[in-house]
Image (cartoon, rainbow, N blue to C red; front, side, top):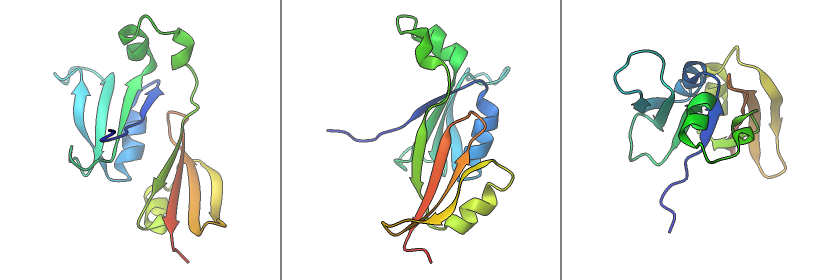
Length: 135
């Protein structure tokens, strides 16, 4: 049935959020507009820049989304309510890579055996990084 699930995050500008996710190993594989003139309205970021990695995130400006999906309720594209949960191999390394970004959830040990920390990425979305079995 389902082969892949990729979140689409609506943002005011692609580049600040792209920089955030690049620090976690995501690389741009698709960009619109493709000609490189001006800022991108939409990008696909895949882990390690590999389309076959199965790990990706899409960023689309709110303006581009409203223009693309004209039959949808425009309120759909406002605000930032997404909450991403990402398993990582090394929560310490990921935390260091994101130094300077806002932490909304201080590092903690959960009852289900994960060490977690949560960051707010520049588009306003919440990203929780979790390492299972970490001390």
